[in-house]
Image (cartoon, rainbow, N blue to C red; front, top):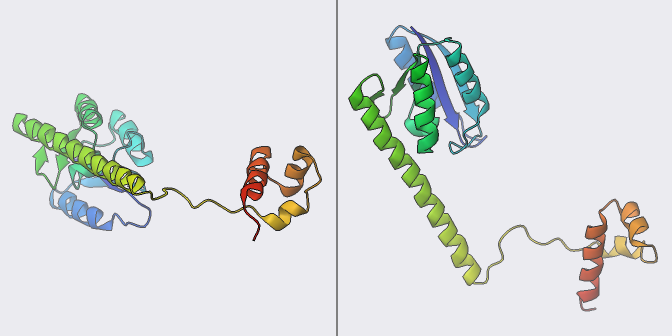
Length: 193
């Protein structure tokens, strides 16, 4: 049997090696040959991922017989996407194994287990989103400014183009007209010290 190993990490500073080692051991124990598909720095909430897209294309070309992933949330956190992906794989004869959850989608019990776990993964993602939004709202009500700190206009540079038109001054400074206008407004509103 030929196996496709899929691993994913959400940020570029994370390494998928823990996932890959366990997946390789499993595939080796089953005496399968394997090809690896790894997405680095990609959220599981995204339906389109470079390695996953290649995996799906290769599945349709029957380049492997079974997809093996470390945990279901590595494959995705959106129930609709997961179900569609696994149905697409099944329609071309590709089986699915998730080590963390012990899922084997070749059985009705495995399919039921998959649907329940996928729903829980999506539920958890929704809860995380709610907590983040609640934290942002609390910060706003406490008067905290969110986002990047506002840059201060370069007063010395603005003085060198003080007598020029907006177009010419923006060109000389290498900024857009709107940036130049905003800087000029900020300088006018700043009290002299």
